[in-house]
Amino acid sequence: MSEPSHVIRFADLEQTFGRDDGSAVTALEDVTFDIGRNEFLAVLGPSGCGKSTLLRLIAGLIFPTRGIVSIYDMTVTEPRDEIGIVFQRPTLLPWFDVLGNVTFPLRHKYGRVTAEDKVQARELLTLVGLSDFASKRIDELSGGMQQRVAIARALLLDPDILLMDEPFSALDALTRDEMSFELLRIWSERPKTVLFITHSISEAVLLADRIIVMTARPGRVREIINVDLPRPRSIATLSEPNFHALANHIRGQLFSRVA
Amino acid sequence: MPSRIISAASSSAASPKAKAPAIAVGQRLRLWADRLAPAAAFVALIVVWEGASRIFAIPSFLLPAPSAIVRAGFDVSAAQWLSNISATLRVALMGYFVAIAVSIPLAVALVNSRFLSRTLYPILVIVQSTPIVAVAPIIVVTLGASDLPRVVITFLITFFPIVVSTVTGLMATPEELIELSRSLRAGRTREMLHIRLPFAVPYIFSALKISITLAIIGAVVAEFVAAEHGLGFFIMFSTSFFKIPQAFAGLAVLVALSLILFRLCSLAQRWFVPWSLPKSAR
Image (cartoon, rainbow over all chains, first blue to last red; front, side, top):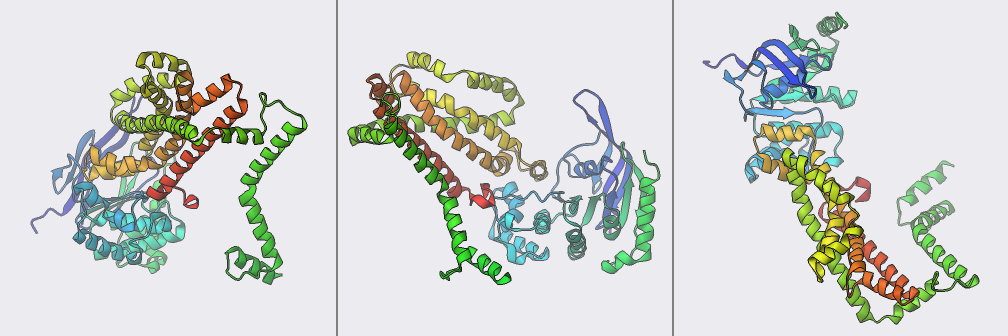
């Protein structure tokens, strides 16, 4: 147990973006928090609070103006292998079938896909509940199924860290609930450190161990909330008094100072 | 009443039970009418044209009747047709394939380099804005009497839509996939080959379909300026000897050629990259 307790650390983070007219916008300011090993952390906030910027900082796609982003206490200077990303849209490749999409990261990174890789991809498809869909075309799948494929794709390189950028926000309400429970099941079978960006309060409370509530423009950490709801969580969780108390508390936080 | 609706629904799904009730027959007739509508409209146009030229005795040098055009077409020997068609086709296809070979790499370069897109793109727009018909005689003088000036003229008319569409397609790739590629550190080459170019395929094919008909236009323009054979030359030659029905026959062959090439383009897309078509068009 010599490993640090945290996997990801943001310290005194500031992120500004230059605009075309020369002015600068501050997207993030004074952001400091850790994410623990195999922790499920949700980042909740209004549009424009820099949630997605956090994700791109961990992914090594952009770099902070000030402060430090580190993974395993190493400053992020480039994209790293221990990360899988699920985006808001599935963004699958229509010229590959489902299996081809799941194995795409390997094909793209190394230029080839071995038989072993395909076996592993099939296991992932079973994990996300699509074992019979390996050779289906993408446009034969529903939105929820496509997002399942995207999750399997993100898990292919067996990342320690799973970054999810509002992954269910484009789905209808019923599919969205279903996918939340599916994600919890997948996470319990393959524990990962998850950073889950969302603007849905109930989604954050249902899924996360901790919730970072952000303010908008510039994005700051307003509050860090421990979600002490017992696991495994299920539909019954949604009707627990504690669930509503937490959700109401967060709602109050988000709307307390309407700009 | 409900049973009638059910039977209509089942027969529209092409059920093999041929003895369908009356409502299904009506439906089938409507389906056929819809399918035959383009051909019927075409035939009607020909009939009206033929009738008008007979009733009003329109002189054939003004507007020859369809029958006269067909007769004039058969007066020309098959060998002569073949040599003219192959000459035009050769120039059109050479110009077309050179345009593809130049345009797609050029589009990739434009997307990859801000410098190139800032310097080359305006020049391309200027070239495109120049009436090629006006430049064609100059090109012929410069490049001499061979297929070369004709191919160059065809190329100049054909390449621009392919460049523009390919650039649009390469830029239309979802940002998330580019981020996925970068998070995998796959490199710019793989990003281009595995993500951007495939994503541009639907755009490229719509440009290829436009450009194949432009290629025929280019070849004919070039033949108008300088040629000893080809369908463009054939039409010019026929007109100058007042063989107007023969000129129209040449025109008809040109249109047919253009349509066939366009169709081949569509078929190639359906064969090689069916995913690039909307579901209904597969």
